[in-house]
Length: 234
Image (cartoon, rainbow, N blue to C red; front, top):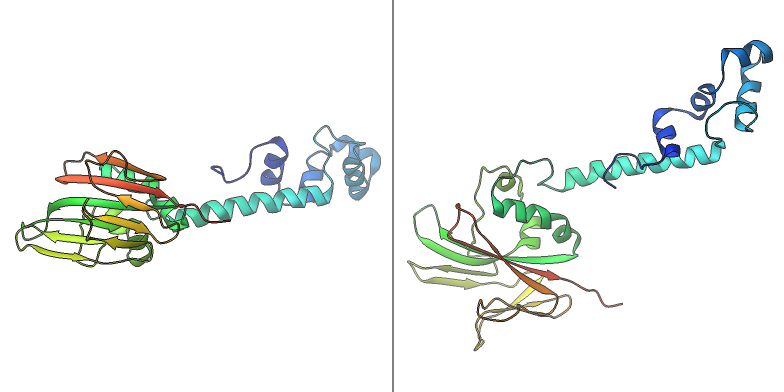
């Protein structure tokens, strides 16, 4: 949920009051206490619906809603800590694209392949395919989302090529198998559902349950993102 507490009048009640007794006391008037002369009795009448103008809630229902609201709050806080991109002001189109995909890649709903072509620190043009979900688990992405570090392919990624030295590498990851010797070009096989992702820009489609997105950003020569929705067998 997007809010720290669920919406609804009853849920607003449980977030407003620390205890069930506080909730009951809020509906007791000085007039009630004057005539009843017993706060506990006044609370019982409110709980039974005989006094008070607010919503009637039994203790069990109040405490259940209180627990649900607290669980929702903790869930949101936990997600904010888990998602490295959370709370960051992202101006670069690539970082924004990666942020929208972070949760899905961390949870396994999606496995994204990022193609990047740019120059390394030595000024050499390099390109490669990055298994985003794997890199998220293997590396701290906070410096990337904070803008202190640029995301570039490495020789340890799915595929890497240095255009100056003509160094070429390919490596399987926990999510993908690399199929390099293929007439139509480089292919990646998803290890979970065994679907093929075709990264040939001339292909009409990258494959089943996959999509291709071109990212325009001044920080890189070329960026293409391939999203694959993984479907587990039931």
